[in-house]
Length: 153
Image 1 (cartoon, rainbow, N blue to C red):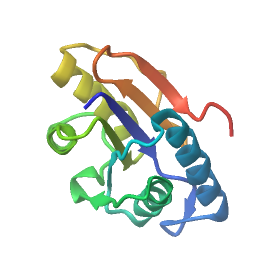
Image 2: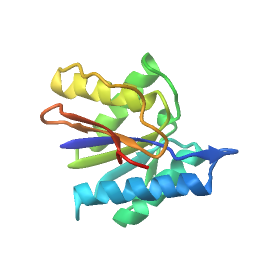
Image 3: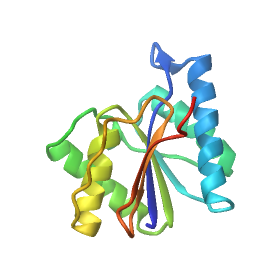
Image 4: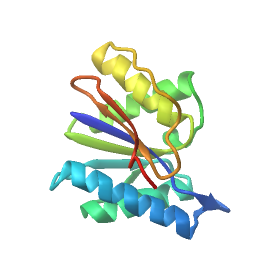
């Protein structure tokens, strides 16, 4: 895996994306498509409806399918559950150059940190969680981190 994009689902009400949440997901998908070009990334998501709907918008842009995992339906900064989510991301992403993970608040911090530690032996610092409909992007070769893509709403 060359690059990991950990996205936070879009804005929602009653666990469904709102119109604004869909627009956030569209802007994110456009920014990711601009970065990845013709590549077909792995897209994995939490099984929460708001995350699945965000992943579906992104997958449509790349003309690919999503894979859903309940292990990504957590909101934690650490612990066994995060370790399991990190291991899942590394395992599933091993056969891809690019992986997009759609998840929740705290995991937009804990997953990139865990992957950087596991793959690079490197500790990375993040300013905070990704905003709704945004992603933190980790270069899995250099450890370079780009936060809150797209930068503007």
